[in-house]
Length: 97
Image 1 (cartoon, helix red, strand yellow):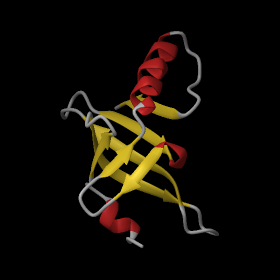
Image 2 (image 1 turned 90 degrees about the vertical axis):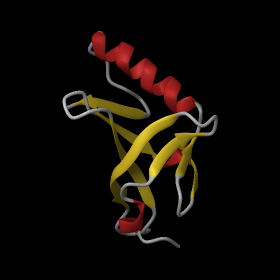
Image 3 (image 1 turned 45 degrees about the horizontal axis):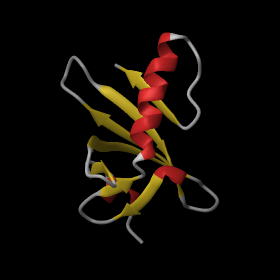
Image 4 (image 1 turned 60 degrees about the vertical axis):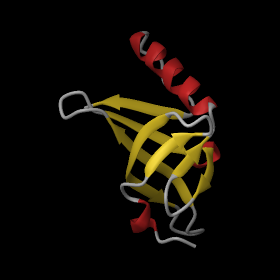
């Protein structure tokens, strides 16, 4: 099992190889010691996007990268649309900083 600190800065991609960003934080369940969510940052200094990706979206974790389901990008796009309508997201939280 990989220590959570080794996940920081790992690239995050979808199964179809779309780059989403790099891991900036990991939320661990204190009791089970399992990953609950990963926080992924992407973009430039003034246009950064933060994604919170739930454990159900994670396909695999290796020393080189984290792979998430292709549906993650659909959820992100849906979230952006819903934000315009002020509706909450269901699986992934996108926040502009």
